[in-house]
Image 1 (cartoon, rainbow, N blue to C red):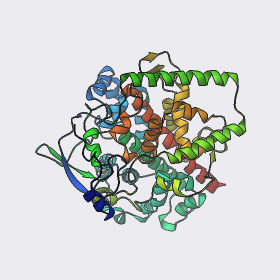
Image 2 (cartoon, one colour; image 1 turned 180 degrees about the vertical axis):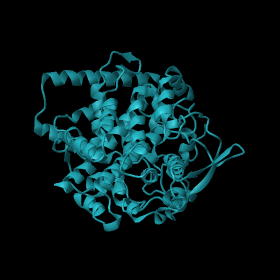
Image 3 (cartoon, rainbow, N blue to C red; image 1 turned 45 degrees about the vertical axis):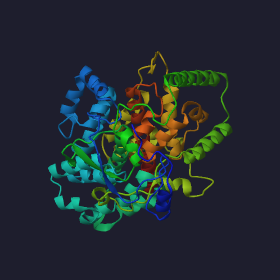
Image 4 (cartoon, helix red, strand yellow; image 1 turned 120 degrees about the vertical axis):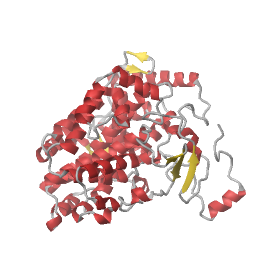
Length: 490
């Protein structure tokens, strides 16, 4: 398949770039600056994901009837949506996810039902996740929401508008949240939030920021395509380069067109990873690094994570449908790496842990949600089938821990008892690029990124990676927000 724009930039294109008509793509070096509507054939991928063959998802669903029972009991939409279908590859986890989400959206809680769905829309809009926005626009109206609010943020009550700042910070730079942000929300006169209401809102915001990461990271297809006409779909080229169109819509093209890797290389890559895991385990039994060395390794990994580039654009264009729900669309994680600080803020995990601090606070202010979230975090962290690609009886603990802790590292959270040297040993660069993109800029994720790491692993294992990234991200956001609430209370 021919790659659009894969050749060198010609003189005309270069002149246009200089004139500001193009912004530069890390792959093909050009793409129109203005939002364009490009005609592409319907994707060859049917089913819930553009990244995963439909038969692999269907096979998982067909083997486990429990999924249908879970959907009947806990689905807010009343149907088996694409997110649920992909998550159902791991039914054990799916149950925890659906129970907690159902509780946030439907069960007794401080916030009225329409507020819950509008907050979900505001959270999803930070990452331009039209999939989640469309889903919750429907739910917002079904639960009695005022249709005028869907015209944009200027039409909503002031107390909801007041969430814009914490929504923005949680989504992109949660380390900036302070007790002053909390005080401003709970002391705004007639538009104030009670602490239980605020905790409910924060849980929803963190949940939907993280869920947007899963949607983009797993290539979740739209539930319906309103722009489909006569078999041709119109798409807005704004968040990714046109050179990605063929790849992102073609599941048959599972290999990297720009890669020379073959099956033999993939297998040796797998064997090398297995060998590194084994060696790490043996080294740990021999001797442990000093606390000073562990701290140094964390700082090194944190700074290196800032240099991992996701290969996307410096500026983003937000579509009108999404932008109405977004305040300050230019605010993003990318600025974290550009602040020029030698000593980026570190959150020492033992000073404020989920288990000892966050859990009890959230459970006290929003009854029972702490138990549901705790079960979900534990479930995904401990989930294992003791397999890696074609290998069985493998202890994957070190790999799961490296994935979870790398996400927290990018958010400035450090575990004193974890050796961050393991991250560099176990996560190759293509995987780090994927993790950073899915976690920090999920709307930029492409199928090429998904295909570029762990080429011999099963899709179910990559879905597990996305579940780990989603939960690690949600927990990181909650730790910063709940720490700020605790400081406000003390």
